[in-house]
Image 1 (cartoon, one colour):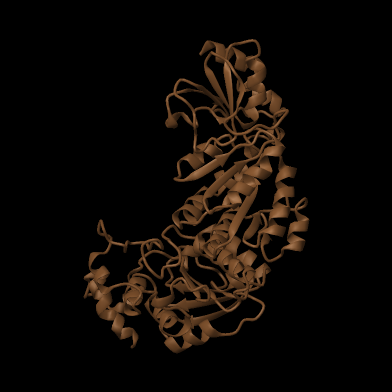
Image 2 (cartoon, rainbow over the protein chains, first blue to last red):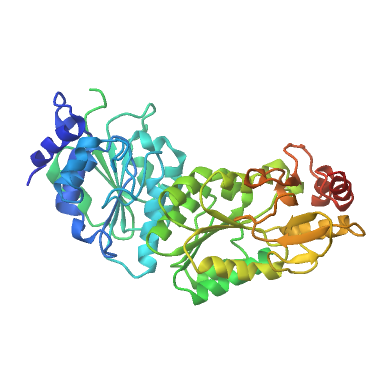
Length: 225
Length: 269
């Protein structure tokens, strides 16, 4: 299965055949995560040993739902009624409604704090294998709560944690020395990659980073371009 | 009460592998032993209250039972959206324990006061609220909160009654109107009603609230906080920023919560 398998699911969800799947900035990152990186599966959504993927940037979750459907977490039929009165799928995901969704998001800047608590909680219980991966947007990093989290995770040497920031240039005030610097100044390791290059994403997302948390900045086309 | 809380948290961390503690610098020094003995389950995240609640939410999602602690104004007022989303909306529980109730921090000014904490939590579904009136009530309330996974708020104060009481106990029998005193309001209510025919009932668990219609509820937080829960009269802290320092006793007088003012207000109702 390749990311092309997600295409009809995306169309089914959005009813929008005019835009190519690449209109979804997070699609390739999500595909690489679910296809090659994350140790998760629809048959073990409560397995304590599973990796935890937290979609912090809850906006525009079409690609997320399409990937979850492609990987068997949710029935494809759910994609036909996005945000309907009885639909489990809304414009922001709800963990209590959607199997495989680890956190309910929408308001920006909540995922990283929850991810740190999750990583600490797993470590406290001797669950040392699961990784915690959290996906953010570049403009989401405007929210100050992220910077509380980035500073603490770096100071805590939380190496089970990886942040993926999908950078589609949507912040009004870009980082003068690049977005990765927001992490490296706090002791994280960081990698800048092409957010459409599956091999580069895979390498960056699986790179060993002993003793510190890791940030992957996935650059995609500018929003609206 | 704060010391009773710290002592109990230390024991809980020792005894219960499911327990976790998250603070944001406040009380770090007296709790130093917890961080030394339990670095895997006790965390001081620095002066970062949003993160404190986010971390508590994440810990709860992995099955632990987090206790988060700070001044009420930083714990509840400042981190309100994290309480709403990182705990409630995730279906995650936690125990939030505050100090600096209402105007306990009077000399620090309004920035360190939160008479509105319980009202804020009342906007959210499912919070249990405990307002102990004596240090000896703290351990039992905290232990009880550890025995389940619900959302619990424990509001500690430097104002305390001369003795501990059971929740719901009739402290002063009488034929007259029932006055329900919440937590540290009991002693002021008892002196205010001395020689008057009032029946005085004590509660340290105002959520869920059990007050009979027609009673008078005396709360140590914003007046009318509980008014949406039944038909009774309410006495509490006035909705005003006085821009004044002074002692908690001064503020009690300014808000009409000292025994003398209370006596006048109770008899006028």
